[in-house]
Length: 490
Image (tube, rainbow, N blue to C red; front, top):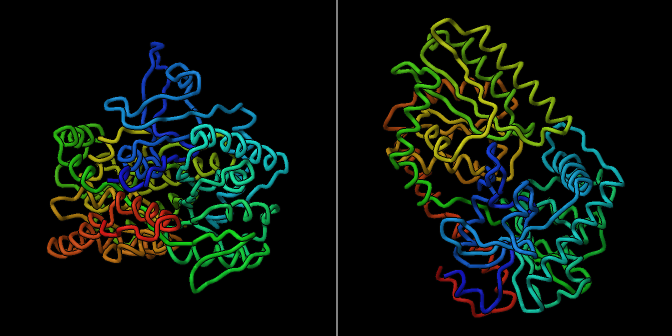
């Protein structure tokens, strides 16, 4: 259906992270890995349905061995349906563009997570250089034909304008911003703000998760650059080009996740979790799954859980929290500090409350397979997402998809985009240990009937507002610029 609606245009997606990574294992053989990524989770089914091309940084040490001379290969391995075009970067380029400007500069700036952003002129120069490399790859894949370019996230702010300057006049360009957009006062700290905003205004569509981020973006443009901002129509005009600004919240493939959750492999993985962690029969289980990132609020969660155990000694020995924290960007100092803080908080909590028979917290700092993560969703009596700031958070929706039996409680930060869609979750201020402790207690005491009522409403919402509806809304909004009579029945 997606390919039929592209009106003869090729779909070209652009992201930093690739949907499949090829690496050499210990035996020297090539293995294919699907990285843990909300973006990849959401975009992969859209690409399978469209048969387009996904351009991404080739980060695996075996990536070059499985591609052709232009860095292309067909994916997914089990049933090839679209092209992956890998872009090769030097270590210096990756360090300056990805670890430097993108993740030491833009990431903390946009998340307002009280980590000071770092802005180095050398990183900005490399960021521009890498955006030009990706722009050339897009034009090569388009090959002069009309194409729809779907750009993702804060790694490619300059790419749309570069494409225009390089002759991409026949391209329709949509840019999805997966993280929050800060208010205009916060954005003023960015040293190259005018150039960055001008780059984004090369898009035909700027899409965010929520209206608040759209408003912040329009306010920022109004402050930093010469452009006409129309708040009523939510569009911006610069140099004669109109950029629509729209809230289009991302989602998951609900049917696929819901089906996976019921597979025998997941049931077997649930049993492995119980054996591995020596979980006693009848113990209540809380779970949390995320990258080890300072924006996810893991130390705050552990403090809140500790406060709960302090306030409710009747739950000692009857509940345990399983915290999966996959290492991320470990070469950066802020992430190394977060890793230390999490490990120290976990050790203090277990030392204070644990006994020979009971471990209140299991901290797992490693990556896990999708089946294992789905099994953990299924095991959990309550699931915690207390990001300090998040554009959406798809893990919350994946938990909901896993709960076909209707029970289970979602504890969700009010500072996530997901909370705007899922008011039936137990909302918390992730900076408040009292809020976190109270929510855990409520989750454990909530009746089965009330759990089922809340979960049904959330499941109905996520099932309807799935990843295909998100992808089609982005494409339909963009194509409407070119095809006024577009049928919107889907």
